[in-house]
Amino acid sequence: MKTFVVNLEKDKEKKVKIERECRKAELNYEIISAVDGRKINNNELKSKVHPVSLNYLSKGEIGCALSHQKVYKKIIDDDIEYALILEDDVDISQDVNNFLKDFLSVKNKTKGDVFLLYPSGLRFFNRKIEISNNYFFYEVYNSSCAHGYIISNKAAKKIMRINTPIILVADAWLWFYQISLLKVYALNKELVRAYDIDKSLSTIETERSLLLDEKEKHQMGIIKKQPFYYVIKYYHKYIRRIFLKKDKA
Image (cartoon, rainbow, N blue to C red; front, side):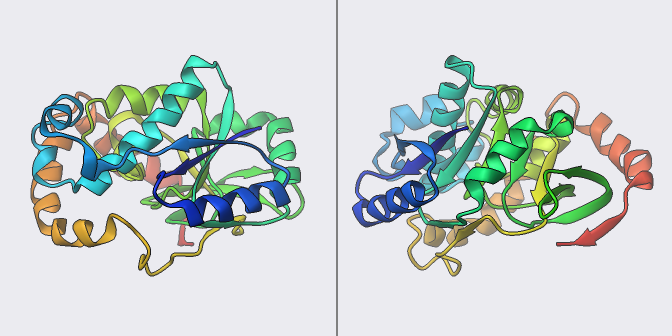
């Protein structure tokens, strides 16, 4: 499986470390030059970001979303069926290569769109995809983070369609579901671990915390204007979740 690693050119230490991790795991990887949101000029921001989102997304979050979209565009243009996307601040399990081979051989993976390689969110125990004796995915709700995940070509097209221009952050999995029924699964064990857990090395976390209140104020206004938001909301609330068994990951 093709692996894409998102890395800011200035973060040379992270690049060295993640390349070492990828080689150890025997991944077929390609470094994608990330978009530095702080260097985007105002005209470019206006052309690539929804006007309301300019009020609450930090430049770091915008750059992160655009960076992941660079990968999605490559997946679509190169007609890649499934790809692994990694951010550059992760540790990778040595099991990952065999896991990816097993994943590609599983037929019912088509039930999902995005597959997080770590536990996250509320797990639906009766929506399960078994990969091997040790690893299986649960469908999840309200998951977070985007430091290591498999995405299908179909899902890349979905996100590009609903998040161009940029409305939401890269890991807005709940909103992507509520807008387009994008189905997200999370792994029962951690194959990819973000080592910057407290975000002390993050280039966007300070901006994110400062704009959090503003984000919450404006976010729902954008989401509710999406064509199928209310249809999907009531489908999930009154039909789908009746049949789902939940537990926190």
